[in-house]
Length: 67
Image (cartoon, rainbow, N blue to C red; front, side):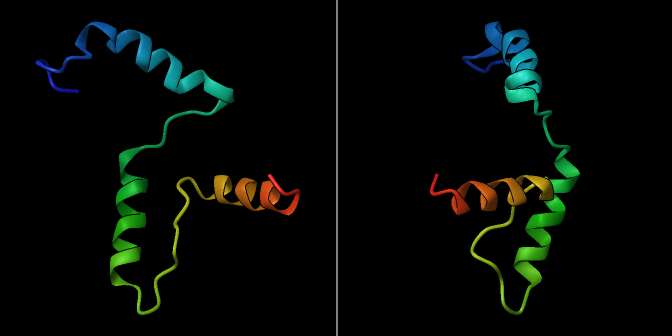
């Protein structure tokens, strides 16, 4: 977050909550970059790339139950 962001006063609150919402932790940017590179370089790219990968499994499970 840039120092001049309109959310700078709420940075501590945002950081605390992004790590604890639903017990999930934030993803390291390197994993997001790896997924982007994989998508760009793929000969047959997927519609979606979940980062972290285990969240993709959770999404599939929810879809199986119609959620």
